[in-house]
Image 1 (cartoon, rainbow, N blue to C red):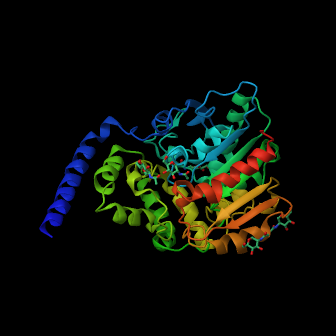
Image 2 (image 1 turned 90 degrees about the horizontal axis):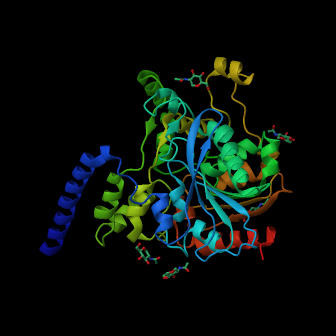
Image 3 (image 1 turned 30 degrees about the vertical axis):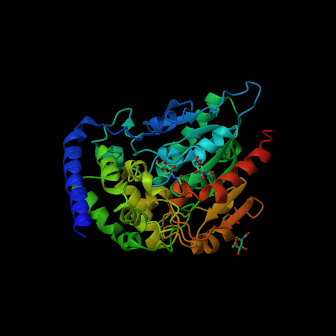
Length: 406
Ligand SMILES: *[C@@H]1O[C@H](CO)[C@@H](O)[C@H](O)[C@H]1NC(C)=O
Ligand SMILES: *[C@@H]1O[C@H](CO)[C@@H](O)[C@H](O)[C@H]1NC(C)=O
Ligand SMILES: *[C@@H]1O[C@H](CO)[C@@H](O)[C@H](O)[C@H]1NC(C)=O
Ligand SMILES: *[C@@H]1O[C@H](CO)[C@@H](O)[C@H](O)[C@H]1NC(C)=O
Ligand SMILES: *[C@@H]1O[C@H](CO)[C@@H](O)[C@H](O)[C@H]1NC(C)=O
């Protein structure tokens, strides 16, 4: 009807104005509307920010929810749990929903000391001791450097502040990959990880589907562009633009379904477990910053059908790794209790990859749980509402009995 048309016109015009305003306002770096701190403090949880320095000079902000909403019992031991986000995302993923729906809040209220990690290149990892984020050298990394430098530095910071010997690690997608990769070659780190909970872990992406699958073969072209440009560069960051688009375009009855569909397009099926009234929160952190070299590395995983170190070409591989083909990661060498959840409807990390490429390579002595969940999109593992019953409550049960918290 004409009334509806008018409303659509209103929303379109409003969005254009919002987009324009946001674009003008962007230099103000007014991007903290739904940042991790405000999402935590708005519900009355205690917030702490800690700075991690990696051995190659990156400066990362990680966050902590020291205890639940009720004042803690000082006699009560709160084991540390570290939550690590995936590609083009950030720590806000774990506090994006209501307190009874977000993994970090549920863990804090269940008696754990919750830590939220951030990887280099996202909005909390854009600083370096000597490089500026305008420098190409700053963006000269892929997930391999996150595994080698970010993971050990973040884990050490958590153990240093808490005075604990080891922690529990929960990683989504790339967040799980970087821990697993490092654990294959770091016995010191292995001693510091009590349990690892892997949500749609990107340990193999050979059977990737959907729009991203069409982009993966373009990785060599992206490398050409990097060469022309002068090096790897950063793309995306948290911005008020995304938040306003989310608020104006998506948080309304007319467009929320279309927005959710756009949102879901890359990650798999439309699973209907997203709270479409919170699109502004989700969109303000998606996509967050990443380097083009990281995209190339994931592209190599798809093209070569293996999970290996970054492929620099035969000559440089030989100089760097001592062999012409970039060496694969051998996940048999991960010797930490593992709990894995994944879904056949996830386009990025498919059940075929997990069941055929990964699980047979794992040391079965350490594989404690391998669960395929029907109808999960890649983002449902941290934003979906069903994840509470399907994943978060089981994690809390396991952690509570493993760490003898009660
Ligand atoms: C969380 O709380 C809201 C409102 O209090 C309620 O509608 C919802 O069912 C709860 N969700 C879960 C998973 O308990
Ligand atoms: C990127 O880092 C590697 C070392 O890991 C170095 O060989 C290369 O020159 C660097 N490239 C740029 C553009 O900084
Ligand atoms: C969805 O989010 C809205 C707004 O943030 C909130 O008021 C509502 O309770 C949430 N709905 C569910 C089902 O959790
Ligand atoms: C991985 O490591 C295990 C144990 O060290 C070894 O038995 C296996 O052959 C290795 N797999 C590959 C593909 O190299
Ligand atoms: C993992 O789960 C799948 C699906 O439930 C099952 O077929 C497979 O046997 C399991 N593998 C292991 C090693 O537990």
